[in-house]
Length: 228
Image (cartoon, rainbow, N blue to C red; front, side, top):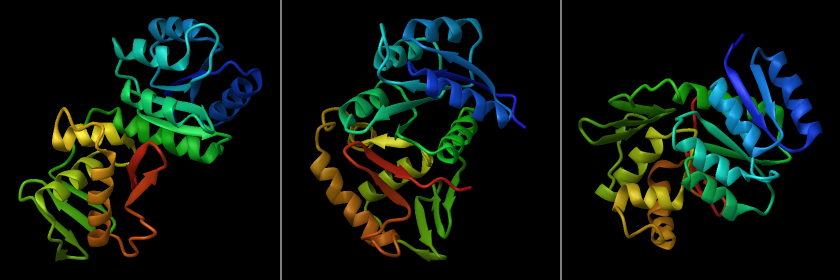
């Protein structure tokens, strides 16, 4: 059982109550806040290990809470978002959120996202060799293999794959990926990025039209699959 502290920030009493009961039953120490101001006070007084943050809040909204938390805390933030708020989800991720779930969401999925966030929060550097299933990326030799056979990637395709694998399980926005691979000034080149992602999928995915490694987060970015 986990003793990690989870701070749930949501203005809906039913959601706060349901998450408190469900998370506590899985061994988490749960704090709840109904507003952005209350969330910041709780986070300062008893730092959580993970924050579950709704975007629509009275007073300070979720985006403002995310921005303020990131000024002094590295705590993983999982954003809750109503359907159709893609722009807000992207902005939250760019402000430092680590992941997001769209309402309504399943409890099993939220628990899985929390486990991924806690693993990533351990502060471990990515290993020299990144692996997922039959895909292997050797950072020292810049060598990618699939089922033991070399995969011939262009330098740009390699950099995209390396960044996604190093952030496995985490939503990577178009802007973040573009900035990481091409540098400042390319953050709005999503169309170019889609071309490279399509090329990469043709080389690593068993069925490129139904990708299992590089998954699309519609209107937001991409998520490389996290291993169990």
